[in-house]
Image (tube, protein in one colour):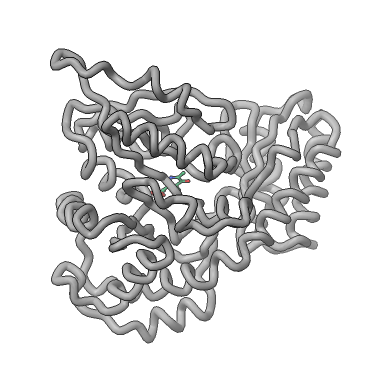
Length: 348
Ligand SMILES: *Cc1c(COP(=O)(O)O)cnc(C)c1O
């Protein structure tokens, strides 16, 4: 009897490691609103260093990180160009509009990867009687497209062209380290042309809480003000930043294991009759598949899996998302595949 719950809903579900808990217990702390928490300061300088930037800022969530970056670079009544299936448009409570007064202008793109040729026509003409485009936001890896990766050259080209058009470029790099591992490149080189970068410590890197923003010193000081406005000024938050430091140093080194497990999952799913998936499209740690001819809806499929202690998430009525992370290993993936196979056969 397999007792462990194999939780493939998201890479956010990871629990802090023993090393993280130790670092948290022992963290030196101070009041971070006074910029006096030594552990937070260390995390921020380390993130800046890894990304080759002047400064970094710890934020409670990726959503707040993205919103802060958007508000720092787009004024009320301006527009942000983003991909139609993107996280900032679909999963962040319309905060850019509800709080920032900014309008998203969405561009649908295959695999979530926008080209400059798709972005350019969405830029508003410079006329006082039209809303003005302020920012382009890319997502790497692209979550709801199945963890797809921007080729670095394409990211650079979009930044260059956007800058030429007088626009800023933000990277929602929630899983940018997964992209880096897939490409075999480093995040500093990949992201150097972006005006702002947000990445999550709380996803595949394994921290319980938190995201980082990196950018120029001046930009980060503006973000600090916005973070406080949003209620994100925290006090002795070094207890959390300590886990973030462990995640930042240790997390990237093992992401290739998650990618291998995602590949095994995708290839195994492809062998299950009536499930539709293109395993060759799986680049990182996210696997999206279609229930195809199984006759099951996402809800039915997920309920039956949950009874067998395997958890996934719905994308829509017919598609399922599963995410690999440090709390599932190769054996868990084999077990999950066996159970999925049985659920599909029983459901047909
Ligand atoms: C998870 C995620 C975020 C941030 O989410 P929070 O839950 O607010 O930390 C942002 N962008 C993408 C692509 C994500 O997957």
